[in-house]
Image (cartoon, rainbow, N blue to C red; front, side, top):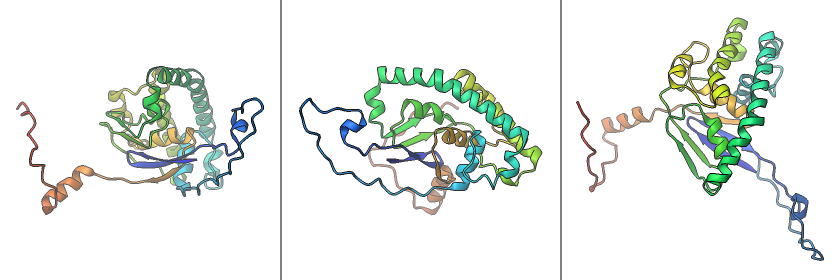
Length: 253
C-alpha cells in the first residue's frame, strides 16, 4: 500500500507492507471446520516515482546509508559521518523504545477513532515537528504544519567542502537535541538554530524525520501563498468576500 502525504512544502510517500494472503495467513483464523475463502490476490498499485537525490540527502541527514553510496562516497568515509550516524542511531533507538510506544498507547486510549479516520491534520505552530504528528496520527492523508521558523532549503551535501559537511551534520544534531531530550522544540532556541549557514530552516529537520520513518520524498515545492494572494488582488483576480461575510473585531492600535 502506498499512501501519499502532503506535508507543508513537501510531498512524501510512505510505503507500507500489505498482506496479500488469505485472512488466516495474516494472523486471523477461520472458525473450526469452516473452509477458507480463497479470495483473489490483488496486484499492488504501481510504485509512485520519487526524488532519489533528495531522498538520499534526507537519509544522510538522518544518519541512514543512502541508496546511491557512490554519490556520497567521500562523505561516507569521513569520521564526522560515522559519529553522526552513531549518535542519531542512539537517539532514535531510545525514543523508539521508550517514547513512541507511550505516545501510541495514549493515542489508542484517548482518541483512536479520530486518529484512524484522520483526513487532514492541522498542526498550528508545529514548525518542523512532523515526528509527533505522524506518531500520533499515522493514517492522515495530509499534514499541514506552520510556524514562525524559516522554511529553509535542502543542503547540497555532495557539493560542500568537508568542513562545511561536518558543520551541517553537527548543527543538525544541535537543532534536534531538544526534541530528542524533551520531546518538543523550543521556539526561541529554534529561531536561532534554524537561521545558520549550515541549517537555514525547517526543511532539513523534516527531511531527517521522513528518512527515519522510511518515507521517500516525492518532491519539494516552495510556495508563498501570501505573495500569491497579493498578486491576485493587484491583478483584480482575487475572489470577492461572500455577501454575508462579517468583519472581524477591530485590532487594538
